Image 1 (tube, helix red, strand yellow):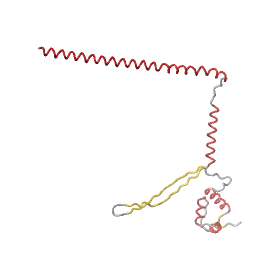
Image 2 (cartoon, one colour; image 1 turned 180 degrees about the horizontal axis):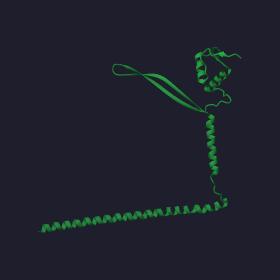
Image 3 (tube, one colour; image 1 turned 135 degrees about the vertical axis):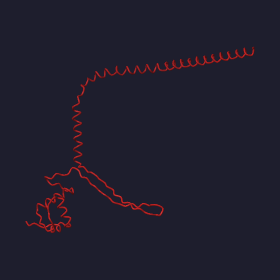
Image 4 (tube, helix red, strand yellow; image 1 turned 180 degrees about the vertical axis):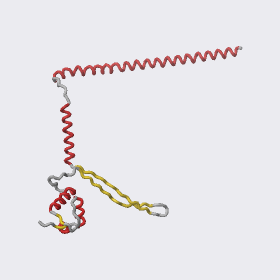
Length: 201
């Protein structure tokens, strides 16, 4: 089979010669110029590189990338109204976006591995031996009745305790008021006695 030149191959494929030379360089295939001859192996290597880079059908024996990172830049200009003279400023804005795509099979594999480890950990945790159901049922009324009886006793005694506390508080307030009135009466009597003695002199 005869070798063809890069120029002839570019016309057959339908792309510019410069672009084809760039693709050969990206693929790591040494091609000197447009008049250089290329072999079938170089063509197959270029095809494999292009399939890998463009996400085409995988080639046996070639490792596929696990994730793809897309970088995108957009340039735009914003016109801003300036000062009093009506000046307009133009500001150049560059927006950079980066997005990473991970192969779905890798994500699925990771989640299945996590589920397996959780299942293994649960299997390793020792479980308590189960008691016979009849023993649990017989024990249940005794364990439930005690807290219920305690709660009912508290409910019954709570109003009595509250009433006793209210009565004690009322009596203490009444005693304090009575003592204050007694003290005020004594002071008034003492004051009246002093005034009477002063007038008598």
